[in-house]
Image: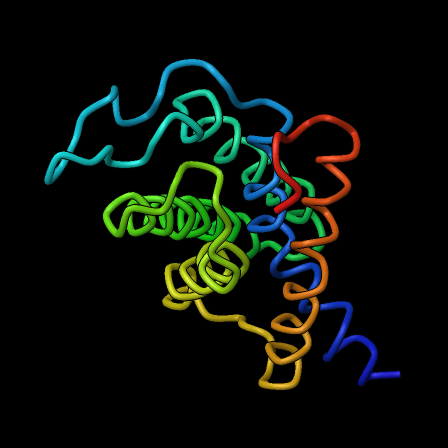
Length: 165
């Protein structure tokens, strides 16, 4: 029974603020681009799909999950804030890299798109501790690799996204 909690349940509870933060802009995003159409090296910083409203909604959604987890795991509120911030940094860094290496907007970069938000979220939250153990992290790597494309495909089929990745 402990394996179920340590390897599956706790890791999901832990990473949930980052997952929700990563998905919130699909529902609540849009509006003005976060980069205000500015460029570096003649290329957009983030592009039109990274918006102020999407970023703010992402942070709020991750924090709400932390508030929901707080009564059960008091340390999760601070971690949730850092996970949401890290997920945004990872997603924005991925968009920045894609723009700088001339990926067309909306084009998929599988590893970067699936794991950028995840890795940066974990790294930013690392100082507060309480990470799942190595088996939980491995489970999350696998779960993220499966869930990210499935949720994106679902959002595409529901016409919430323009592309299925």
